[in-house]
Image (cartoon, rainbow, N blue to C red; front, side, top):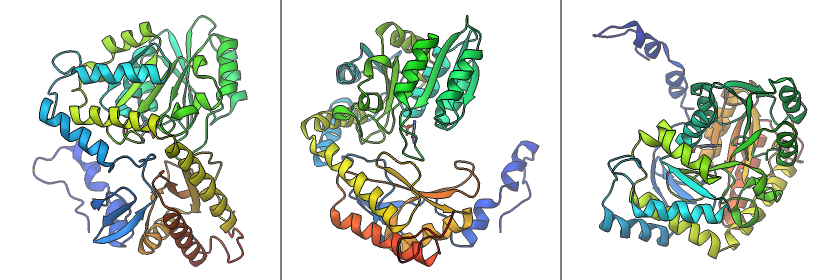
Length: 412
Ligand code: PMP
């Protein structure tokens, strides 16, 4: 049982930690699905608790985390630059490698300039905080990622949240807003839980109508979808109409870090003003080299994006045919709705026993009663992996009364 009494140096500030017993309760039931250590991985197969299971919950979309070329790129630069930068980009932490990556990403994304951050989280939090100030209004989708939400909270701007992907609501809010205020619309390009695309053509129209800026967080889109992997706006041929696009290196680019691209003047402003950029150490050399290599592979091996799209369509179609509700997924992120939280944990455990790892997502990340398991796919999954994942879903789905044997959904 959890210890609920605060110990020696008692301060009321710690009591909440002792009161937090939910995780322990779920652990005691043997259903806790979080913080599971991976003991080994080749990308698609991971060892957890001594068993080999198929990874169907990673953001390693292009399957490059274990590619011999990315591994070698990381090893090579460590010999030359060492293991860390021990300083921020502003001061002693800029390497020529950082500049090379910024230049290459700006060219790839067809924007004037790029600034790197040490994580995707910091990229959005730090950029939004900096670009919007007390005279501005941020219009933010209700389902935006936490780092955007925090960015709006720490900025001095007023923030207005519009209903998820509801363009009428967005337009009404802009129409009501102070016409003299600076305005910026901020949205995930691909929503991380549902795998849905933002309504970018409508957003561009609205932004033009009201003279607003448009900022897209393309963490799940650059290196995943669009022309050559250029992300959500490129799906619609609208790259030039989006002012700022951010991305992460912790997914398709097999590393850690993030970036923002846009007009040079705006990027230089953010580079000089963003606390997350100035007061945090820069990306270590191995991380940068991995991204440079991944970017090269992305461009040289277009089959990876094609295969990813083919896999996404295959899994979406087949999960639906089995009777599962996959929400409105349009990308390699495919959620499967389970229902109540405890049922979701039990479902997660049974899938794991069947040899498949997915991610359990429960309230408040999703609405109450809509707990889900989030699946996501990689270009390196084989057909056999995919069919084993589908078999496991079928077995566990029937066991839990979510689907029947004829492909009918048994839940709302
Ligand atoms: N934005 C979105 C939409 C994300 O899903 C994530 C990570 N899950 C991030 C930003 C943060 O990226 P990072 O992991 O690089 O901090």
